[in-house]
Image (cartoon, rainbow, N blue to C red):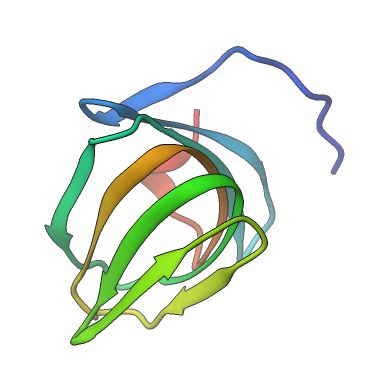
Length: 107
């Protein structure tokens, strides 16, 4: 499956953080996140494994007990069921892949 770039389809996850699904298959889903400086993704967990890549900006990720300040080009992986959170230090864009597919992220 192929998808063309568009600036449409973003949904707000929490204030200052929006996302859109880029593409998905049977077992994985890829999403783009736009994160405004000073916004926060509160502590949460889900059964999906989550791998991410920071395209631009800067943010602090806390995965379990590990704290990491991500800058462009950095990546991370969150095992399913592990609590994690984010503090956005500068406007940022991240791409993340989830497995299995997050059904709530489908249009």
